[in-house]
Image (tube, rainbow, N blue to C red; front, side, top):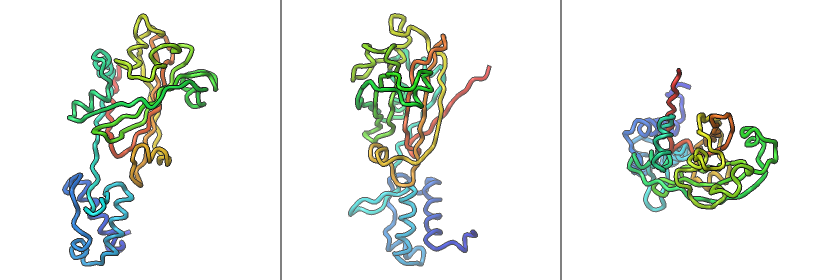
Length: 256
């Protein structure tokens, strides 16, 4: 539809969206009042309110009671994934998420939500290469940056390998589970040589919206990351749910 044929509220919303995405209106900046925007665009407050509601539904604006309407802050974390990066983080004992966030001047935190044994869900069993219902250990975690929820991560591990190890303890593991996997004295004792990631984009569930504070209109990325050892053994599946408005991912793939 030509711009001149768009309803006025759509033209106002498109104009403000352009200012936000171009950075002219920066995250956290307060918009003009409805009265000021009404005068600026030569329309009514009802029309302005419809335009603002559209941008709130897109996750670009937020309202604060008694203060006004603001450009929604976006605590983006740039995540770099390479084999060399994985090795570097493994040796320091700091997770890749924490290291990347800290390097960007942000304050990361991981919280253990729970650890339990349960029958492997079908999609996890398929990735682990085990029968449906095989007992696995699941470690549920939430990741935060500057106290804002960033992602939910459930890690699945075959109970026959990891039963009775640190994996079953509801606390942080220095160096992560990968350190335990590669420990010569550990339950696996093999080097991780490959990660495979399966990505899907969908709208979040009500529980995910609440847990991750996802605004209306923002989709969710679900990433299944499967770890394979040098012997071809599958030892870990990470199920990560990540709001698409607060992460930037970069994958570096070396082609021999």
